[in-house]
Length: 179
Figure (tube, rainbow, N blue to C red):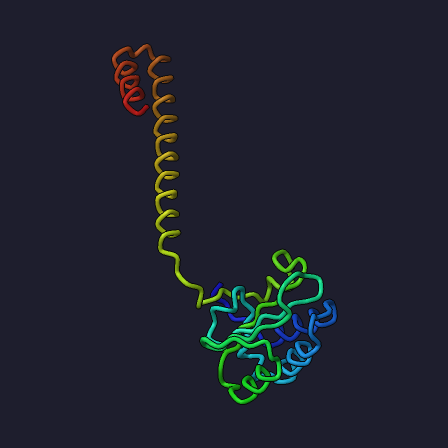
């Protein structure tokens, strides 16, 4: 997802979210309303998953989920104090803020999906990439063999229709080798 989400889209989403969901801590609603009040700040806001990996990440939960109400991650420091978070955002308004919202149905919610961005700070899992690469090769090999097998079967049918015994034997041998 390399597209840019406009300030208007982010504000529309946050207004919808605040109207639709009750947050576990009211300070979080105040914080989100503060962000909403400043277009320059909203430009720096990014909605992501796994905000704990971001240089400046907020994780806010609604009442309808079983998650920690609020955490603020800045570099290696973590706090549950929304006031410290507010002051840091206010004093460092030039820094990007990554927000993860936990609410019921978040994974399938079209409003959230419309503003959700890819988290550029997620750790790379090389082992997982290697496994995926091997699986992709296996699938590709299977598809190629199935295709070759179908082509050989069609060619064998043609040889039978033309009573071409030599071609039939040659293609049958190729099919046996393919198996």
